[in-house]
Length: 420
Ligand code: AMP
Image (cartoon, rainbow, N blue to C red; front, side, top):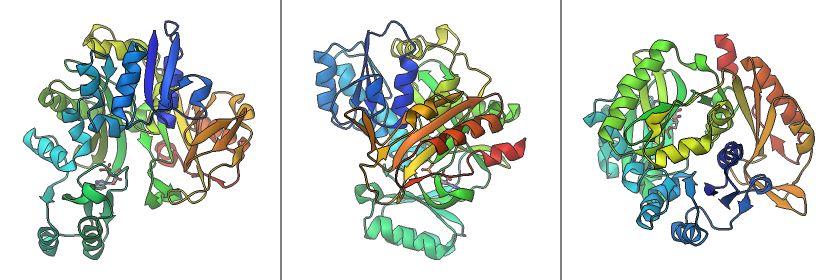
């Protein structure tokens, strides 16, 4: 079998790694991949958003299956295109991917299907937004409607900040077309959790729950990022919360979005009134995938094939009881501008540590050496029997890896440790 994985992050490295445990696969291809994926898959230099070139490649090379990692090709209709060409692909259609690519579409969907979420006001011109803010209370959340790589959300502590965000998005057009329409949303309090499911249009299987760390600095300070770390342990949700998420959020969503297939990722707020949905993603999260897939005991290729063939309900998906953690090593300056091309050392030493696996994100392989090539550089993942063991192992490996400007958060998993 030949399998193509589209994307280039730590998420895709973890997917390639999980797929490579299947012995039926002769070759994994990755487009465009990264320096670490290059060790486990054949690199195809096609950018993830060039959906026509991807479909041509998959057709010419007779791929048996393609998995789409990132949101942009999904929103551009890569799945529709592959299906039109008779190619087997896992992911939602562009119509279903709108649950992620338009926050207004998502909020209307939640409301229409009585899925618990923050109260909201949608607007398509700045004056309406300013007028609404005259009677609103802070804190309030301002969200650009379109895809903005995690940068389209401002949690405004004051109405002054909210007005400034409206100005940035709608008048200064800082997010381009993504900010043409906005959602102004009630601020919710509580812990966040990431709840992902495999879905095939008829049935679904929940994955193990995880928690990520979006802010750049310790104690959730600083700007939002693509993700600075995550951990996965079953106690993130109580039994009652787990049931509530499935019954009040996941089941009604999939009942309404009837043919949704692929990965559905619910970003949750565990409010005092019960779990509420913050947002949906139409794909695996990054870095959550790096802590979820190492706990998967079932075969990922079989699951993907079952999704593509609409027979996901025919067998269970099994997970280990282990705990996993990931610490993201970033280049100094991230999430702003960073300098690339720094040589990375210590990767082999880190990989030899017990329970440790390093997934690459912004790296480049050249003449056997690995160099930095992006803001989020490496994902140091570790497993353990307890959260503190998994974290200790990940942090020990993070110390062993060296490159100029290396930085990382020192408090990943702190909330989980406090729970005991
Ligand atoms: P999103 O891209 O919609 O997941 O938002 C990014 C982050 O902003 C979330 O992970 C939350 O930390 C925060 N956020 C978004 N919406 C809300 C809300 N209504 N109340 C509180 N925090 C929010």
